[in-house]
Image (cartoon, rainbow, N blue to C red; front, side):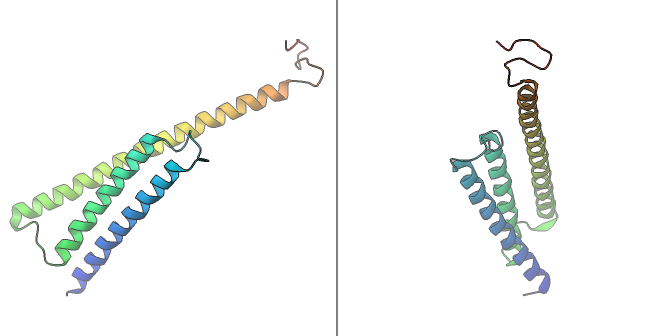
Length: 137
């Protein structure tokens, strides 16, 4: 086997293994009873499982190509192969950006809620009156 084929095969198998680990980890996180429900959402799980499936698909194609099982032959095959890899990479990028945006938004919302409750607690005095002298009740 040519060294380039070996490298492609190892990289493809690594992508498959990574996809499996990521999928198992995300399912484990989703089912954990003590998870942060604001952070570990069902939509996050779906997005990450789709990303894992895409990574696994790319890994399978790379490994098959490296082993000599030609899925794509000729100029049209190369164009289809390159187009499919490009589309998969673009989809992974879009899903990752959406995941980042949702995670940052959820973390900001949670932080604001915690800050708001901390400010409310700080404004209360032990006498039952707020700092500005108004009765809490």
